[in-house]
Image 1 (spheres, rainbow, N blue to C red):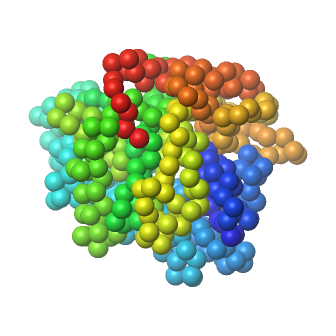
Image 2: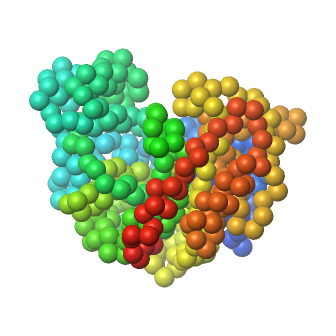
Length: 429
C-alpha cells in the first residue's frame, strides 16, 4: 500500500516509524515531513494546511491510505476532502474534529451528556468576562475556544492575572480568532493523565496511559509549552480508574458524538484530571498527542497500519491492540529560549541508537546532508525498558550523547511518576 502521513513533527516521525513495521506498507509519503523523517519516508514540502495541495499529491501518487495527524488539517476538513476523492483515511471528519476545534462545543457536549468535567462559563464579551471574574474563585482557568498550539490555556492565580488573560485573548487577539470566545473554568486539582484511544465510532480501545510535562522548566515551572517530555504508563492511572473512565467518560463521549450526528473515527485523546471526586475531562484532542505519542507507540506490539485500517472500516476489536508491559520515557531536546525566542540553524550530531532506543525528529531540516535545528522542540529522545526507572535513566543517557548548540532539556522528566510508584498499585493500560 502507498501510505500518506500528513504532518511534520516528532509525533509524525513516531507514527511513520511504527507504520514502516507493517508488511502492508510499501511506500510512505509525508507532507511536509522534516529533515529527520526524510530518513524513513519520502517527504514533500506541502504544508499540512494546504488541503488542496494534499489532495492533488495523494491523487498523483495513487495513495491507498492517508493518516492525517495534526489538529489544524483535521479541523479544516482534510479527511472529508480526501475521502470525497476516494482515498480512505485515519482521522475524524470535520464535524467530529470540532471536539478539539471548539472548547465551547466540547464543554457543552459534556454538560448535555453528563460527562464529568470542570464547571465553566462561556463569554463572547471581554467586559462580561472580566465582570464575572471579579467574584470568581481563584485560581481560575481561562481558555481560548479554538486551536492555539497548546498555549491557549492560562491558569490565573489572581483577578489581575485573569483580567490580563482575557485582554490578551479577546482584545489583543494573541491567538487570533481562537480567542473570540473564551471559557472560564473552575480550577481542578489532582494528577493529570493523558489517554490516547483508538475508536471507530462504536468501539473504544485505550492505549497505554501517559504523563505529559507541559511546563518549560524543572519542577513544573515556567511557561506552558507543547510538551517537554512524557512517560508511559502513568502510575496514577490504575486498573480501577481505567474501568471508571471507560464507563463514565470514554464510551459516553463516543456515544454522545454519534448521537449528535458527528461520529468520531480515529484517535481520540482524553486529557484527564484525577480529582478527589473522581476522574474529570480537562480537554479532548481529535488526534494523537505530542509528545505522548512518542512515549506510547514504542510499546505497541500490534501492527499500527492494521489497527488504523480496522478503525476506518469500523471493525476495531480490543484484542487486536496489544501493548508490551514495559515503560518508556520521552525527553524533549529543545532550542534554549523555547517557547518564546530561540535561535535555529545549528548542526545536530546524533549517536547510533541501540535496542529499545528511539530518536524522533521534530524541528530539524536537512541542509547539504547535515541535520540542522529549525524549531523550538527539536528532538524526542525515547527509551523503553522493563521498568520506568530504567526507561528514565536510559532516555537521559541517550539524550546526553546528542549535540547541538543551545540544546536545552528538562532534567526531571519522569520524576513525579517515579515518586508515585511505591504507593500506587496496579496500573491500567
